[in-house]
Amino acid sequence: MSSPSKRRDMDVMKLMMSDYKVELVNDGMSEFHVEFHGPKDSPYQEGVWKVHVELQESYPYKAPVINFANRIFHPNIDEMSGSVCLDVIDQTWSPMFALINVFEVFLPQLLLYPNPGHPLNGEAALLMNKDRDKYEQKVKEHCQKYARPEDVGIRPDNASSDDELSDQDMSSDDDHHHAEMAHADP
Image 1 (cartoon, rainbow, N blue to C red):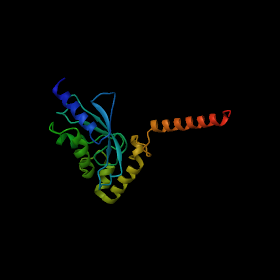
Image 2: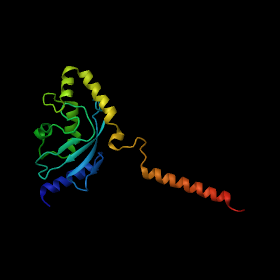
Image 3: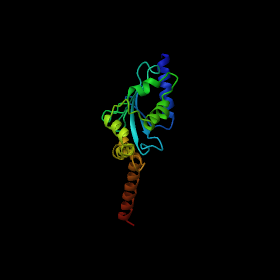
């Protein structure tokens, strides 16, 4: 295994061992989804996004490709495709950074400090420059509409389907057992 692929695997494993929920695509280490929560004290703080990450063969020398799977209203993120302005990550990326920096530093900074001068979403850039309060209100509305926990596959009741199934199986077994006991001859 070459050094870049060892580094890629190590970075993905570190990310998986962190507090971020990571889902591998096709059981490979070069493509995956990460559950990303908006930074606190920002109009994005209530939002939860599924972020698609692709690590190119030249990673860590080349920055990861980042896309938001669910919609987000931001000047530097295309609202429909979810692609992030490559300049934002490419200009600051260095092989010294670990993959986790994307989620702990780059994306939070991007959401906290948008750059309307290089927009992928012209409407967001225009609104941000014209009326910051209306921009922040629209961001919050998008979070409520498109960036809820259930939009990234998180169940609101935090119960897994396996737990529900086993609880239902147990109660139906108990009901069946009680029904048998009621019909049993003394």
